[in-house]
Length: 254
Image 1 (tube, rainbow, N blue to C red):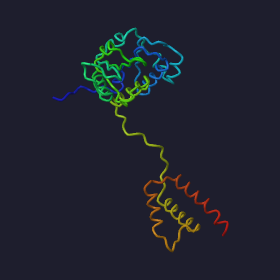
Image 2: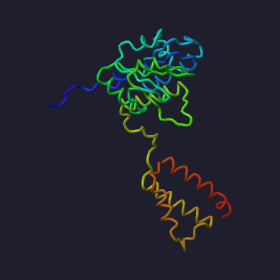
Image 3: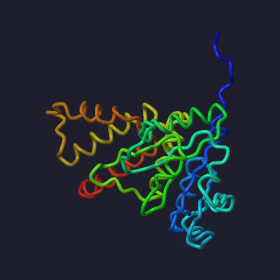
Image 4: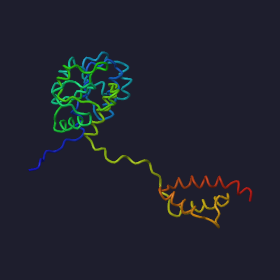
């Protein structure tokens, strides 16, 4: 029998994710983390014993994500911040003696997304900027996670680490679909493009660059070059305007 359980929506999945900052010392990092959450569609920020919060610098660095700051939950301990959570991922940059297998950030994001998609409360836990998470804090988490940074210099800013993990979680939880196309103009018609080629031949002949008696493969190559793209009306008009300008000295001489 196949599983008929409906897959929860992306919004519900991300709404079940808490981002926990334990003992952050810089209010700017709290604001930047709030911005990172909102950029990737998350909103639940928990702060464990923040040194300075609320703070004007946090609001400044949030850059429009002040609603995430306003709804942040301030806790006295990591245990309190993880109340009701069934899976907590602890971010660490140091290899430690851990009984639980560690996962890289991308794999961990998939694990958390899967748990949240099944209705579980999950958390991503980040430690203090200077010394990270303590061993006792790591012991409260079920999933140690490392970001595969340069092993010779794996020191990520707190807000940067939050941004990276929020991105990975979003990518694990959503299908972004086809990238949006750029703004396209109205395509040129066949006759407009043909008039452009005639104009090119006329201007090149007048300048002496093109010899109709010995054309070689200049015009076919010109056609091939423009044929690799789909010329728009505005582009044809720009090119013909340039050719008119280049032809002006030859017209004045004749």
